[in-house]
Length: 311
Ligand SMILES: NC(=O)c1ccc[n+]([C@@H]2O[C@H](COP(=O)([O-])OP(=O)(O)OC[C@H]3O[C@@H](n4cnc5c(N)ncnc54)[C@H](O)[C@@H]3O)[C@@H](O)[C@H]2O)c1
Image (cartoon, rainbow, N blue to C red; front, side, top):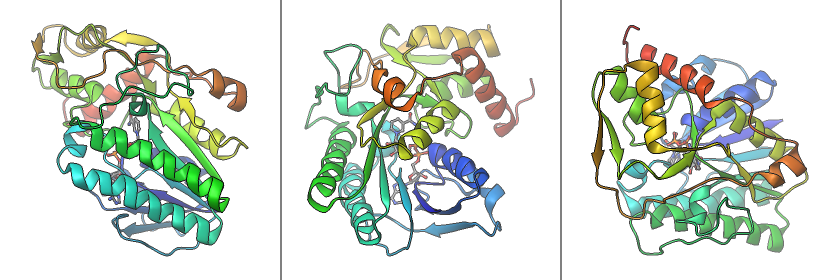
């Protein structure tokens, strides 16, 4: 198949491209390189089945493809809040352009949505039926509400135009190729510990998160795309840890001598987030397989090499 991956030079997109290329598909990577890096896809450059297009999805594009994995959108608060209006344009205009393309060429369309559609949830863990508790005018809204509209658009194209859609709600995912300084907690802690700097915990560290290793997530993507389910389907690891526990694990793994320091909690930071993955288990036969300890080791090895820090 010829498969388009928007945001393909980013963290998740580049891992997805690895899987698709290894399965012998033709892959078109489309990216504006806002948070993506050529390094992430360097190893496929020159491959006859790989094509790279520098393009911003807020502008339309015409391509002939069989499937579209639509991932383009900055994922970390530092980047999506850098230009919030652009983030909305990417989620709304960009998703419309990609759905329009899917409609025109009759491609199956996969939307990378997010657990952020649940906002600061008052139901725990979150099943797909939960409609969320999102602040429409807060500093995270450009992303949260942007993704909610992207889901709405996908379902309206499905109902109105028969576009064959798949919608995944991704929970916190970590692994090699995350950016080291984008404020995401795993990469933050690892980079800080490797540099011998104190680990910064926001709030008292009692807020919990679930952490899914990237290879598990990508397996879920492939299964959903090739299933008969439209979704939305939660993909994430239900193992729940407090942020302080995560800091302590990384501190222990890298350098027990680094301090942990506490800073004020940012606005609208969710207190708890944990996926209910009953649907993924039932309909896709999917569940995570990589324990946090192992995933952290792979991620630490990557950052050690990337930051050029010897063990
Ligand atoms: N990583 C996670 O834990 C997580 C959680 C929930 C949802 N997601 C979603 O998964 C997708 C990928 O996330 P990621 O972690 O790989 O983030 P990322 O920032 O590494 O990747 C996003 C990619 O999209 C590109 N991009 C951004 N705006 C674009 C535009 N207007 N036109 C073309 N390309 C553009 C960036 O350059 C980058 O390569 C995003 O849609 C994100 O919302 C990720």
